Length: 321
Image 1 (tube, rainbow, N blue to C red):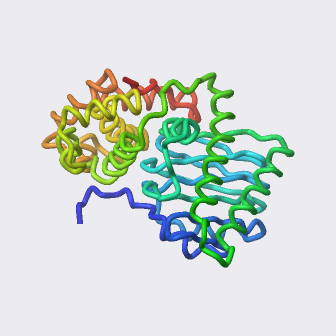
Image 2 (spheres, rainbow, N blue to C red):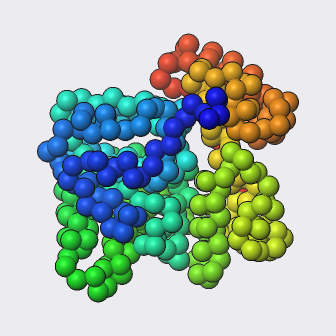
């Protein structure tokens, strides 16, 4: 085992031990057991830090949770929705004894997710970093009703049209969440909805990146995986996402690097080896080109900022092509 591999994987199958779980085709995991004690569930998580291998959406019903994900601190209270996507690193979590929540967790290659809709594309692109939405009590009740509807669809005896119904439910959820995110962030849907094949290529590319970025950082590698010429592949990814393929790959790598630097638990050499760079010098150059400063300077700045404001390290925005 790689001696520097200190970050575990948080695989969706670990959720199977949770009580009150409703599962569809090993792709969608719905947990609506509001009255189950969450302290017991948290103990079932893998040892932290752990990298998320799925996307999860929580609705906090009561109590409070504090968590650190990919170098940032979040506080989730009643009527808050907390969304964490694949690739983020859960570093710590603490909850109050009265914490209650329901959640839906989805694999990145779930057949129910279609990116031919503007809302699903917007939501995918918005969840590079975790997000919190603050709902009113009335909105929270509507969300509870939505989760109940999804559960009833999954539990319905007949499989006829079940996948279509769940796909429609996901589009409804994405539309609702995207509208809130757009209002909060003053964003608009800028990418046009294009052909199914192009959307599918982008979806498969992001899945491949999430699984291979610590080893493979060349656009050519991913083009070969999808059996497309590198030039055409690069054109499709940029057209579909507004972001170059190399930048998608880089952002996954840099997120890991920043998280490990912020934690203070790794030397720069250890981070370089954990991310499988040829040597520390190559890692330093790669990091500086992406962030604008060396890993050492970044670590020193984070340490300095933390001493002034422990809960709010300064973070520069990642580049969007």
